[in-house]
Length: 208
Image (cartoon, rainbow, N blue to C red; front, side):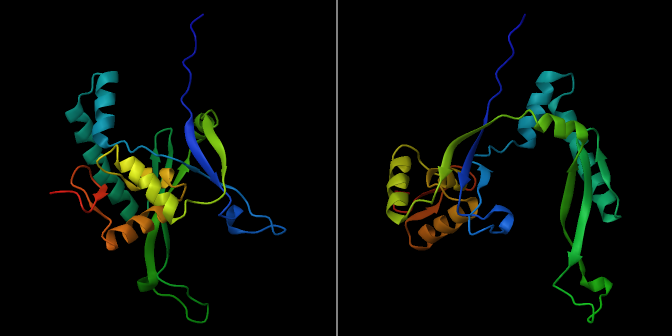
């Protein structure tokens, strides 16, 4: 019998800084679990993989996807829902520009598109149930300024630049906190945007 290929686990981090579902029960903080490092896969990456798995070439993947993009926008602009095969359904999420009371009433000018809602199918939910996760335990708090700088110096001593999601993992903080702290370091002249990779940062005092 052939051995099953071991599934790679999704690395997670758990913090107690965020209350469970934004609520507090009996004065006890909840635990929020997030993906530690989410690797971005581009259309080019997926096109290459699809090309390797079937007879469809990369150009065909791009052609079909470009046509689908236009169709998705067109259907959503008409208030339609889109069933993406066995993955799930896309639909438009709408709301008001600002909180409106019943006494104020509402007009069409008050309504805006808030986002896109994706409802996974039963098949995708079943696949998600088999996902494996790995967590190193509870992170009680993010690094303070001194710890952050030491971690940053060690990392940039080996790598030419850093991206926000790596910074978040490195300093045990959320993505929003990572962006905020990086922007503070840029404002203070410690870091600057790097041309080595999109969305990356390097020491500001590096030679041009």
